[in-house]
Length: 500
Image (cartoon, rainbow, N blue to C red; front, side, top):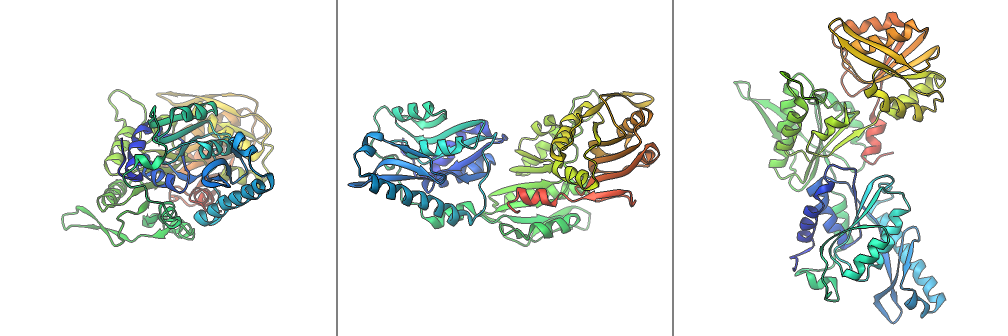
């Protein structure tokens, strides 16, 4: 098979990698040619794109013939027989030169921005084809030094003997063609194999995302727009005389990466506006549409219950139909909820934000308490981040016609920090604090990601030893009380979008 160009090969390769859609995989392209394929995979599967830079060291008598390859960090792979036949001083200079060139390219392509760490992730290494495999082998070693969970080598064409070398290095090989008789050069498998320039690589890597923000998130948007990669997009939500909603874009988006910073939470017109905006961006030719919904509403309806709606998969289907290619949220209700959304979901953790507040208050000696088993992992993350020594306690929750009740498990000290994802009516948190209060806990702080504060039942917390409630700014605060402290998630969002 002959590919028309690298873009076509990338689209075929994306189909072969479909199983990695919605996972924690990161695409690491080998520049320059591999970046074209990597960009197609990023677009098709909604995966982040980075680089792993390996430079070949050509033979002194024939620079096109690779005898070794070296990466940015100095990972070296050689044809040892060929290396033994060259002058050691010449080789040392050549190795230093190519490693410096790898570092130069990283700086040129990313301007000092750190790479995405592969630690614990699926690392997909992409090139436009492989002959000897030296550069891919060096790239695999570079990525493996970061401790990924899985390394995948994805290529359109590769000789069979090279596949065996890659697999011996611990990589899973996804190859579109493994010819028994290799034609001798990767370019023989392409109709158009013109060289890729640095400028083309930079353009593929840096499609400056355009941020379309809802008015409710104007302060957060203003801070995010200070990050160099982001630029503002102008839009409005208008209505016909009969009340029908219409989205109007003032910023062109064809072939652009776009971000919608908004909400699906009530009032219901928010969901309609967000979905219609996303759909309009895709209709107008946006390359990607990322919905950033700090609080992803309706995810509590993730279970199938007779006679009741199951809204999580319904919302997921609406997001998919509206052209959303990725969802970014904070502390999604459950892993099951994330699985019910077809688009890849990134759930940012508030653990570092809560931990910073615990340290500021000097409460590292407190016991962290999960108000039900579902909050245990969240609570454990905060405990690790804050450096709290005592183990997490939790409440076994039961719902009865009379209300929510629970039994505490674990030792709890005089001070406790209760950590949960949502404070809605507060019934679960009230039950947990009642249990703590009756066992002798004197001072309680409640930390919740999403402070909805519905009704007034939650106000009983103040009579159960709760001195402070901390919530993040994922939803606008609906109540005013000096004992409620709002913690900013902006630093977490900035880290996600490439800031400091």
